Length: 322
Image 1 (cartoon, rainbow, N blue to C red):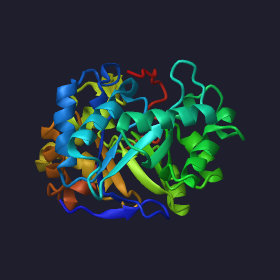
Image 2 (image 1 turned 120 degrees about the vertical axis):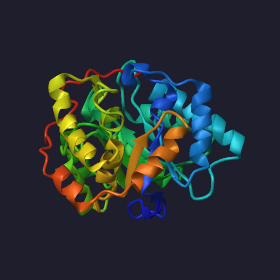
Image 3 (image 1 turned 60 degrees about the horizontal axis):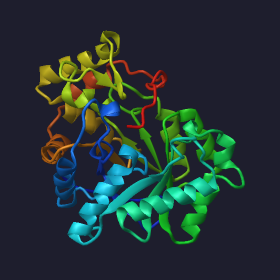
């Protein structure tokens, strides 16, 4: 796979066109339906830092802090962040009270620095503001957004981003704040295009687009028989119908389902990097193989001819932090 790089916004920070997500590496069985041990996470992280993929995304609240803590331990073992590698993390609300003002944002930053064992961060996103107690608490004069941008001015972080679910909330904030980057997840996949307008707005504003969860949280990698979970929820037969139609095309053209799902995101000129969640070492090479798997124009035409939803795929999701 050819690794290409894009500058984050107008900063000098450069991100590779493929990244790995460390959500599951924190151990989140309520979200993914399986757990990941510390040893497995450690081995996977060593593999990531030794691979050609130069981008890793995490968050303060993944696995109640375990994701950052496990990354921090491996960084200590390898002597710090490898040259040219970018780690992205996120400021999170108080998970007990949902408070997300400027004071909470500062505390979240301090927790991230401590867990990762770093004195400054590269790319930091405001995470899931739609779950905050009050959105005005996020965007007010004493809010977490203002605190985030102040952190950049103070040199504590290099680039600022927004990572959330609801497109409407993200678009409102993107219009009013000059972010360097944004992450959308589950909303630009083979089966869903809910983020189309959001991605267009970001491109217009020179906000670098990072697209996460191209596998719709697993089903577009493992298949509808092996994985009956979609966007972190148990999937009904009706929900899985679009996946089965994609599987039929992939089977016809002898294409791995995961390769089609991954390349759909990676081939878009509007997306700078595609972030794939992984939970075990062998998925590193599998992802690289899928990224360069040959897919014919005929196959793409058939895949693009399938209907994709423009609705919020997580509209009925019950959020579980673990």
